[in-house]
Image (cartoon, helix red, strand yellow):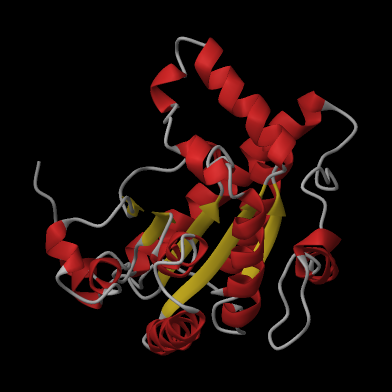
Length: 279
């Protein structure tokens, strides 16, 4: 079992952005399907097994109320953030799991520093919190559209690193996943949303404006990932053209992280041994 865990960790490490090292998104194919098997049926069973294991450990995490886990999902529109949550946590009891989505900031939020709205959503002890988008919007969309300059962007990288270090030092386990989708696959998914009545509600015409500056986004993501992947808050680049591959990989990363915490249910208080439940 120990050898299997080491083998898995080594495999997952190749998706990790190494701190203080050169990094290029062009070296990672969005179409990679390395986590998939030769059978769709096998993949379905594998995802169910992973989800069941995650549910078991999440239940212990919640009961123990010692650790805090933050899963950050970032990616271009239609990269699969919602789908990831649906499948990775498909077997989990909602108790102890919370989703926080970050849209354009409100007037109330804009009146404060950009991390204020994010800090209020971080997990408490015993919780897994999933960020659908995050504080990284404040070094991505704002940089792509030149709402902040290069100097301010670098200041924010440093502030984010300090913020995440503080979270880690106070007991939060941070996993950051960039859902790496190709421009061609995004087009296919946008067209599907337009053509499929059950998915049309997901389509936002404004997403086309962001698609028009795709290359600028890729530069912004590459710079952000390189500047903010640390040992305490690593970034993983998730090939996401294949939804199944995406779900398998993120499930394995999360499960491997939960296993590393050596979770256990709280000890039964001695006074409970004397309690009698009357008929």
